[in-house]
Image 1 (spheres, one colour):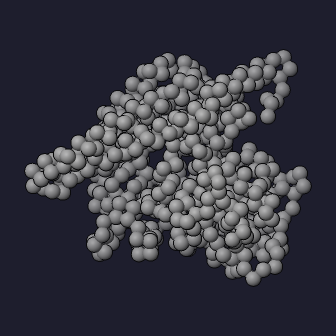
Image 2: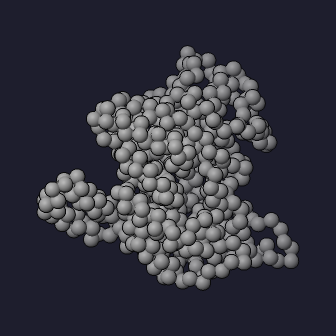
Image 3: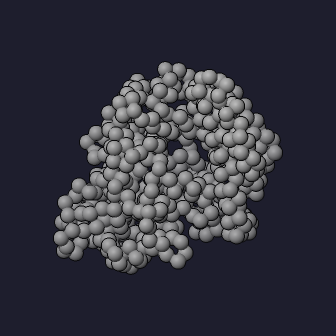
Length: 537
């Protein structure tokens, strides 16, 4: 049933970004940044009269953050210090959902009203969510929803008028009409990172473009592109530089470079701003590979201080690219990647290993041959850093619908495994789940090795001899820095992967995988039997 607030002079909304699972290999970067969406929602909520708002990022709790005996966030202490009336949860990463549910139950028992939103929450997950400590689920973008929701709480009802909201009324799930995607971004307040408590942010997330029209079957982001003005994004930079002394930025847009002329205009605005304040800023973007065909755009990006591009190569295997709805050939991808390299960008390559083919298609490459092709591709494309993941059948995606009879049961592989580091379904033969797990470890383990510690020392020792004779100090520095930076990251990656592998062993993952395959086989046999019925939950 819909809730109402107790009478108070002021109320507190606490928005929580749940911690990654303990064995997630990307936790290191999370200590330096945060998620943009929760900050945007909190900023919008701050405009509601009578409400105080704070954001707690469990992955970035470096400034006096309260810790419990297990090293996590001490929410009991937070509640004693500042009792929350409403607690919102960020469900943008499926692997954090078990932690989200754990916290939702805690806060609900403490008397708070609980609300969650994010890409994880779709039709197939709503019943579970509303049975796991959540009073409400917001579907779609949250800036307007949170304001209307808090307003409805203050007016003791009227939730039916809040679009994009779901709750349980007795045993029935109630859903209001969907909320239209936002288009007037210039009318929204700039994200207020001062609402983020206890965090120490080095890399600030910013954005201008929402949506993606690429229709990759493994992705949950599918909507038409919507753009804010270049001036708004520049003002976001200005605010963070002048209030947070920010130097490093990550533009979270999936498709930086779309709306080409406006992107170039933004780059020139950013270049002029840096010249005005006499300070260089460092920016990383996510961009499509085919934008390498536009030298004017790449030149503007370099002049604006965009140093690193993150590119979803996905696979060097042509058949897998077709299965993903990608429209590039591996040989063309190598040429385009080298163009980014030649322009001076650091290239971070993202890959999906062992993507499942559609029914009727076959690919008889051995796991060893796939590993070899991927290594050759990375070397030829001159990629600086890599991220190799396994396919993840996320809720609400076309991939999950296609693989529904091959996905392991959730009782064996819970949401905490849905981060791209674990096999979650029976793959296309001749691959096995064990092959996929081992392949990722081999590819990442070969790229991120202990030996790079010695390469780092060597580069430091040779620094004067490599830089000074060039006379062009800027060019010499760029040549030296690129290799030194890559060696440093590769050695750091070795440390991270080693810890990740140890935690997998302690988690007895291979035993869980064996159990999951047996249960999947039993389910398949049952479904194929003479009395075919629904698969077990």
